[in-house]
Image 1: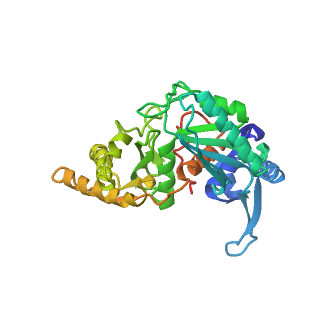
Image 2: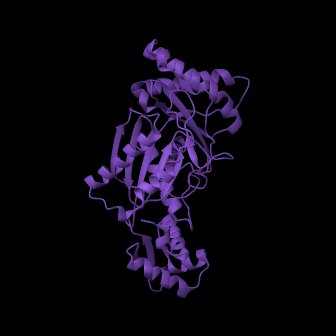
Image 3: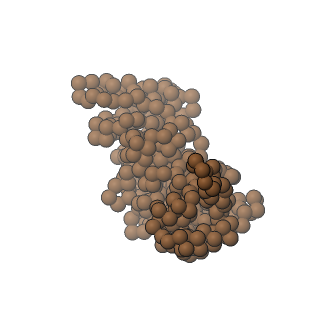
Length: 365
């Protein structure tokens, strides 16, 4: 399904306004889009006939006829979101509103240094998953993927200890060819951060988000993202959010008790935070460390205590560290929503880097 080629630019513009505003009248569409009523009526008629939008009557203000409100139909198209945190992989299938209809989590641990092998397995899993739920490819709009990589020359590279050795792998082109769908690729922690920000309603705040996730060799990887007024800071080339030496080795943790392990992880996190917090001055700092289970609260408390000690006499204004509110498939779900946003842009809205894909202010779940 080539989603964007199925619509004229003015039809995509109408869908975008309706999706972002969760419904609008003809008068509102006419004013926002700056198009004539005959052109608008023709485009709306086509979208109604294609079952992409639905209409309902709104209560009239004072006297007068009720206005007709148009909304995007909940299942006008479906979108796949994927969190590719190797060896862990999560799929979600979302409707237009970003609600999860189906989800799947699994691991791939073999041949991780062979990207073509891994990508073939992903395609096979996606096809089998869609077949299981009798989902026709014709109802799919696109795929959004969050992963812990760097973007360069149109490809994705994994850099760092205990990560697969991928260099400028053309993930987007391969999946686009195999699935015949538009593909959007983003940084995984950016997806998680934006989902958290939207969930908490912090779209007018500066938020520092950190994730602690398991790696390939029983290690822990620490990722970060900064959101400003609901927008993810992507950097000059789309690679903003990386932390230097933000890995805790599994061998190091294996020799420690649980409490000592938490203190070790906290020291590694704080070594980054003592520089990031004064630089960004966040309203809120959030840590997602679900992989630590019952030890997560202790980690956050330890980080809080260490930072307060480090900042004493050096920095004023440090706020409380909070645990992430979204615990499950936030990265995959937000990747799907970012893909929906990109689909509603004129021309080729889906690209390899996440510039523009992860920075929309409005619709998140």
